[in-house]
Image (cartoon, rainbow, N blue to C red; front, side, top):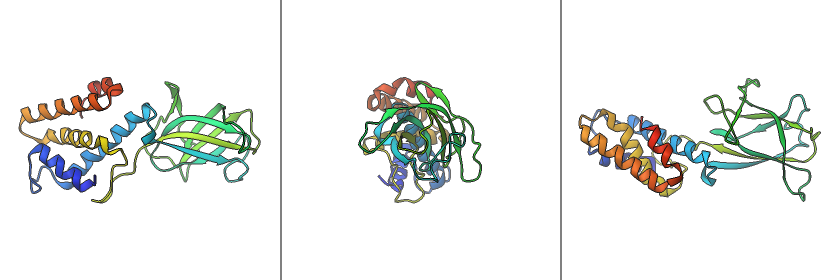
Length: 223
């Protein structure tokens, strides 16, 4: 579904027209994108294949690996949202093995002393907001520029910047995105009953589609 399609369906759920000054394209785009990012983040907690990527780093490449002090620089796609796991592979034929991470810090294109990641629920979770360029990792024992580092990391889908942009999430979540965005947008409505129904319908659908995340959906609220 395209961004323009999401807007049309959100307006249908709100029962408003495209000329309503309270529900402009820009406002609905914001509500839609916020819902997409929220769903992607929550799916990432469960390591969904739709919001995780694999990155393989050749440690023999000088731009990737400096020394044990400077660490291994791993450049990731925008929207990086935390490391799921890190493995080391001595050769292309060997079996990847878990590694001990001494430290892992985010960096961007200018500053290399980003905020440290902290460990929670067996995941590395970014302790800062925003989209870093990548992370710098120190390992033990030091691989000394030999082999490959394999990272599985969570990401947030790219912002939908045009009317033909898609969410980056599976189509099975389209109805949930629409209801979630409509629930967020409904705070501008003057009909309390409509607001309540949209929020109830959203939470019911979320718990049915993502049953493992029902408790999160029920506790976080809409806003």
